[in-house]
Amino acid sequence: MAVNALNRRRFVASAAAGLPLVGARAAARPRRVALVGSGWYGKNDLFRLVQVEDVEIVALCDPDSRSLAADAKTAARRHKSGKTPRTYEDYRELLKQEQPDIVEVATPDHWHCLPAVDAMRAGADVYVQKPISVDVVEGQSMVAAARKYGRVCQVGTQRRSAPHLIEARDRIQSGMLGKVSHAEVCCYVYRSPRGNPPDADPPAHLNYEMWTGPAPMRPFCHWTHPRRWRYFMEYGNGVIGDMCIHMIDLVRWTLDLGWPSVIHSTGGIFVDRGSKANTPDTQTATFSFPDLNVVWTHRNWGPPVYPDYPWAYFIYGEKGLFKGSTRKWEFIPVDKNEKPILRHAVTEMDKYEIDNADTVESRLGAHEFPVLRAHMRDFLNAIDNRSTPVADIEQGHVSTACCILANVSMELGRSLRWDEKGGKVLGDAEANRKLARPYRKPWLHPTPETV
Image 1: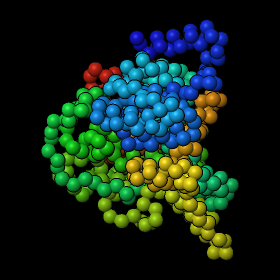
Image 2: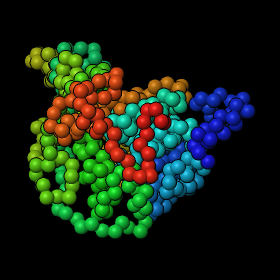
Image 3: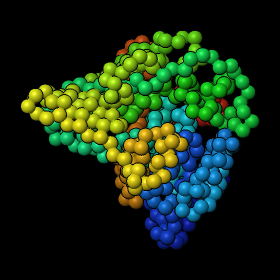
């Protein structure tokens, strides 16, 4: 049965019961949640959602049958009913059979768009990990789907929900920095892989055909799965796509910035050119907004500029310098008579005892969990009120597209002038052809007109 038929079936059933058709759920029935991509970060998101509401985890989907079985057992212990979620290899079958209220998408980046669009078409609200897409047209299609089907779509740019960074934003918008004319974003925590692992047959428990999906089919090696797929551009957009998305999103959110008008980037693989990894180990990008530039730098080698801020954003104003990260922020005033300010991220280890174990299992810092919980509360509130969440899909699209366009600029060796209304690069047909990656058959690339 096609997913739009499922949507009609749900519509008719709701209408016959005299229920509201948007955002409806019986008070006595927990929200039905499905996770597509049940690996590392997907479980982190899902288990924070369970902590803020007694949702029912009805299904998990992943092409790795071994990890999927283990993840289902773990999920059964984490939600109130204790039931083991049903498992699926193909998200389309999950949508047909389960009709979830909420779908979380936490796959590798090349698999974000299609499940999110299909879930919204099927009537679910969606939480999708960042970056939302691997190309610009995917992102445009996801925004179009959310608007067409009236769905809430929250992006995993959860630092918009971090209490210490919310305070920083409020202070900056209240004039702490005065006039702001420059910002920098950076990442020095990545380390490029060394060596050349041999090609090998995928493990028997991994459906590599489904794992690859619409991406180009490349030989499997032990870097491919699990978790080290980011070494390959076929599945994502490198360090800038993984890490800049968070920091440029924070700058945009803090300063209420929209789209940049010009994007320029240079970089490449400068350190280990013999490696099988094909993502840039060094890159700089400049995003030109009205009245200020935002400059990104990453190096997968060497020390950070500020040792306490290896992954961070810096905002320069006439009254001083702001340094921000997931762990803390500082204000360093120009006026020596004014006191500096230092704030740290909160933890809730005493309130949520399971965080102690999860920090070990997930390899995330304890400061990450309160932020994820707050982000999930915002998501649920938006669902209940049919309102715009703090990290709406459109904002996630802008921040994601900035990073993608930087890679296009780097590849072509020239600046790109962005047409916000037209959703394309001005006067550059070659760049515009790169706004949508070719999909591997039989997968069809969505467009805003076809979702």
